[in-house]
Length: 170
Ligand code: GTP
Image 1 (cartoon, helix red, strand yellow):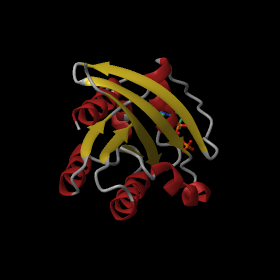
Image 2 (spheres, rainbow, N blue to C red):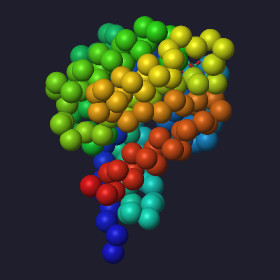
Image 3 (cartoon, helix red, strand yellow):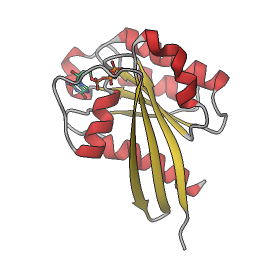
Image 4 (cartoon, helix red, strand yellow):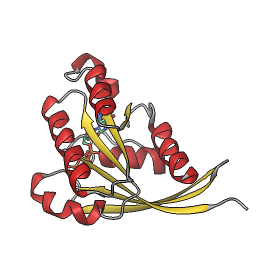
């Protein structure tokens, strides 16, 4: 029989970059123009069935506000995968994403699958972070990379299924 893996997946990234929106888009197929800022963290579960096996995700959607930063290690400890988000219209959020990546590389599980995600790709006319900047940073740091839109659903299923595939094979 095919294997089943239970995997902790954590979302990290600056406030307002769309962590909650990406999770909501994937789990409920919904998008809200006004999404409330997360307090502490929110927890969701989702089961994905693939050819490679079944992945039961325990998803932690953390709060991006700086005052919650000290809680983050509780959420990435033991995580099989992390999604670090930035907003392509906000250069500061890209800098913040890089500092999350550095924190994960120093203090996180070394075998963690880390995805760098440039969200709000639908706002291309307001873009401040070129796709190449995200791609190059990801390549130089051994990360997976995608640009997504929780609004249009661009690359949202791809993100979760790509993570699941890697974990199911491991
Ligand atoms: P915190 O909980 O504060 O850390 O924020 P977050 O990263 O969870 O962001 P959230 O999902 O709450 O989204 C913040 C705002 O951006 C909301 O108004 C969303 O509607 C909007 N938003 C999220 N994703 C997208 C997207 O892909 N495109 C556009 N245009 N807006 C988005």
